[in-house]
Image (cartoon, rainbow, N blue to C red; front, side, top):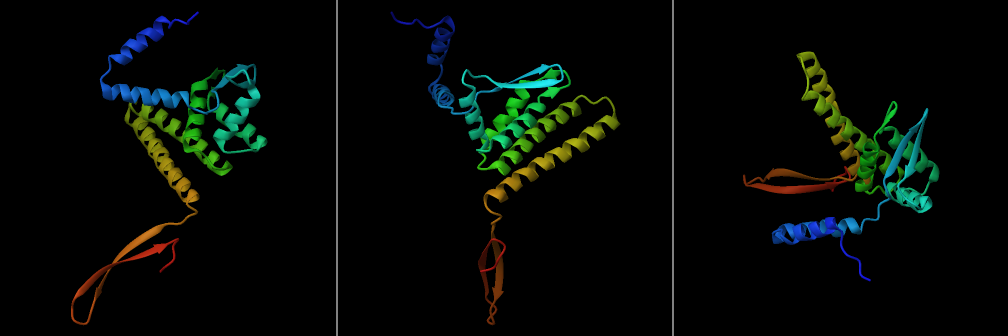
Amino acid sequence: MTDHPSPTESRFAHAFEDLPDAQRDRVARIAEAMLNRQAAPPMKLEQQGEVLKISLDSDDLEIATLLQMADMGTSDSDFHKGLVGQIACLGAHGRKVDSDNSNFVMAVVRSVKPRDELEAMLATQMGAIHAATMMLARRLNHVENIPQQDAAERALNKLARTFTTQMDALKRYRTGGQQKVTVEHVTVNDGGQAIVGAVEAGGGGRK
């Protein structure tokens, strides 16, 4: 007995075949990447009285937890538990919960591919700052008076600058603070001929 495709699968197959070659290639590549994802399953949040219940959308909680720890770049269960709780709280607003918001921050962490706990914390902050930036951008688009506009602009600018600072911090941490600087200089010989050269320095020192 062979399995027959569902109506949804059939519609997708026909739509896929009708695409131009370039679009079909792009769809195929992203579909393959999604199938090959090794990420942890998404979190599910539920408010039970005063307690925010955190679970993973998986039948095997142990494996799902290990995958989530791998996404965070940690083997420390205490660190994992603490960071997951902090990320989950980003999706809790009083009695309301927003699992999508917390899962977005987890996706940011995963995309950074943290190599240790410090990178995981910084990636979490980057996800949270981005979410706050988008909230302020939305608020700025709906201001009703000048004071509201000024307040939203100031907060939005601070958040945007913070995000770029975080990205710079992550880059410096990953490179060990080493920077390669090329300094152009001009030397004038006794005969009056100018020689233009480059001096390269690494890690803040001189060569």
